[in-house]
Length: 183
Image (cartoon, rainbow, N blue to C red):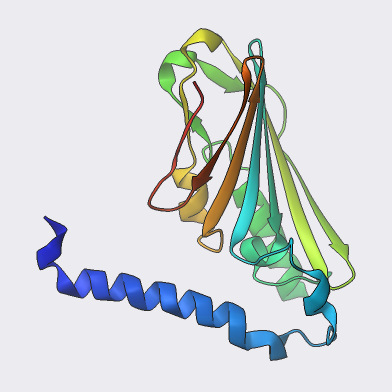
């Protein structure tokens, strides 16, 4: 099993701890928001939301994430470097390969993927929407977000919510758990 790989386990722990420290200690990088920490409870770096709404053959997926997870910063990009990074990351974010439904359902994108980057005060959000149509919606069983989480390692926890004609469910996804059960 995995127990003999002491080194790998240790690396993982180191990486996780490091991630937590990053979120705690680097307040000094937030140049102009001294008092902002109070209002950011609902806005946790490393966490994003995935909303999957499914009715008939249509599936809408919305990803709502702090910009930090996507771009590594939370402000209006002004330098060429920041603007180029936002364009490159947005292009990656709107790639059709990031979300994969099980093949049997025959789902295909039916609209361009839209991504909005909104800066409000001291924090910024990126909302991305996918619209799929599935040839065999009755066969729709899972959505794999592995490619999304691999492309955007800043998203450590993905809180998924599924709303279908049959009801609602929720799941926690992460790099080690990338399959969202849809039925």
